[in-house]
Image (cartoon, rainbow, N blue to C red; front, top):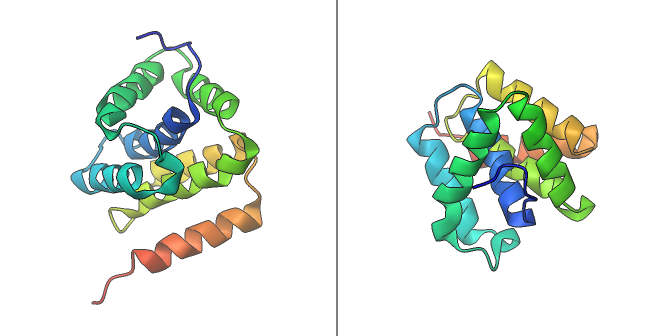
Length: 140
């Protein structure tokens, strides 16, 4: 599958989640479960065939394996996402980072890059992050 062809908005949303999950070179079961849940339940994925998730994930990994792969992935995402879905992409990425109860430094760095590359306002990002923290809180 060519890695330079445009992404659909659905694929760009998946790319955002995969970038965070792959940031530490370890896509955990909990991260993959969160991605699957988001794809099957979030209204933003209406009309997306959830069976395509592994194929889109593989495409993202193929892009990342190229020279300047992270930059290419950001460029593809930015081109595919209308402004109305950029906060959504960031929110989905944050959900994946929160899946393991503690985000790694690499995941936090990729989240920061996504926020900047998609022009997500810092205040909106903070609200998204706080909401995810509340949703993933555990009773000790």
